[in-house]
Image 1 (cartoon, rainbow, N blue to C red):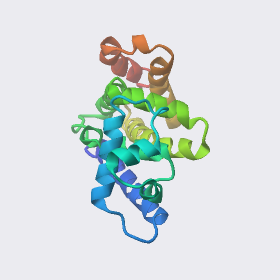
Image 2: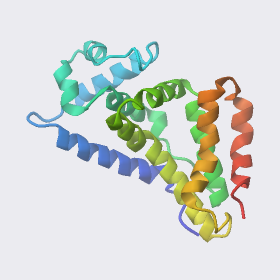
Image 3: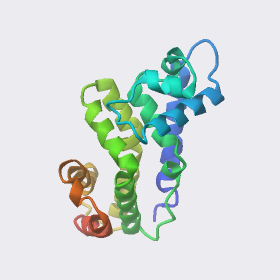
Image 4: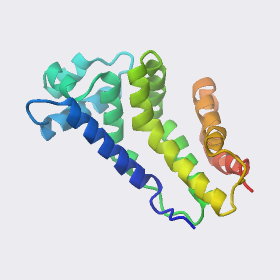
Length: 214
């Protein structure tokens, strides 16, 4: 059986490494100040507590963090990138899941984690980011690489392992399976937010996994 202990952990580490590489390529001249970086991310998270993504501005972040706008633009290409980095920097976002007993359990826990994330205050921010990113190809890529990619890659990995171990249908396309499992979560969040509740969280992950079970 494929090793499941990694869960999102290694993927998040890979994502962090990719982000570090991209940021390294983006910044020139003076090296990044870790103190300034933390101040910018902390300021962004604090502002998001009472400001929507749409109303948030680079100017407001710079003022709150007590840095210049040029400092922010030296490390991030736009507001979407700053907000995504701020979300990823939150401690709870990087907490790996417990080791699953099998692939079915792994996918169920991954779906539960996704629902919990979207059902939190951060879910509001993520929905706003998703909406705003539609107007920019660059922002869409940032949203996919920094948020959606790691989550969906973890689920896809567990589905592939489950197909090999006979837990999931061997004939189902893995990407299609990911869409089948995750699509209704985002649809309910965007179209029926009042029904995106504890009952949905309690019942959906197990019911969804049954759709691809062997």
